[in-house]
Image 1 (cartoon, helix red, strand yellow):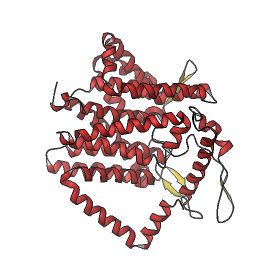
Image 2 (tube, one colour):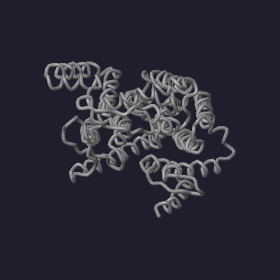
Image 3 (cartoon, one colour):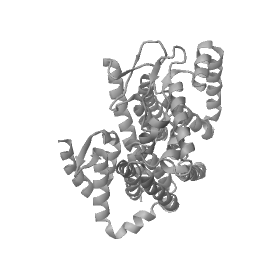
Image 4 (tube, rainbow, N blue to C red):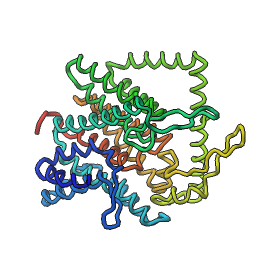
Length: 425
């Protein structure tokens, strides 16, 4: 029944495509609403994206070349990225599953990026997009806090031999998915709020927004997301000259407190040394992924290949204290973005990804001496959140995360336009 809502959405695309895009960004988590059309699995999110792309391209059929040219100097990196992803379908042990990954995580996000770049033309448009991210982050977070209040979520074993604890998930099936989604949005939302001219509104809005969203991460116990967001904030504080002294002072106090108290010091070294249950499980997964890479070092396993082959490479995990079998579970991806890229796209795919990151930050740092310094810094910080979180999870190979990744790149491309120096075109 929910798919009937796509009919008024199509009319919105026809007459107000910019607001249709805004709605898509708010409803990114609807990738979890799934159906089948002509034996092809689809999600509510991707149908919205495809409707927007199809109608917009038909209405602008004579401007297709111009739409592609909006990618500017990103045309070649994106083309190579798509070629690698296409070839990875045929390396996959499951052609149909690989094609599904290709469609959802590569083609559709980049099609959305093309439309995004044509619709966002000035600062007013940029504020509209960032407001969608803020609204989405708050909606997800408020529902997550409601879960905490009524004791909903999932129960998880975090420490050997200790009782399970409640972790909230919001609209997602797992608390880690909440952290993966919220992390970049928190930074982008703060970037928009930091640009407010009224200081009272700036302070109150930033405290309220950050407090609600960050509490959600804490109650989800998404430690990788918490660390990634804090490093993103540290980046912003160190880059913006007016906040450098305060940032360094706060950092020094935090480090001092961490290492003075035995509890916090032990916790720090336990996490860094992967000595807790979560760390040990991840290390076991990484070992299996590395063994698979050794077998297929150049081409990788193909799209969706890791999930199909992981069982043959990942060892069973036993409690090091009792010898009890803890886990034989395999995962769709090996809880590390860079291992995943190597396995899914091959060595060349990983290299192209790193190339795109270098290009992204080179463009971002060029903006720091211009009027858009706060927004530019927050966009780069959002990407840093993805990079850091990628050390312990896979913040790309999901419908919502691949869309977010390319929209963050899209924000950087938009920011490089001279048009953005004025409020309107």
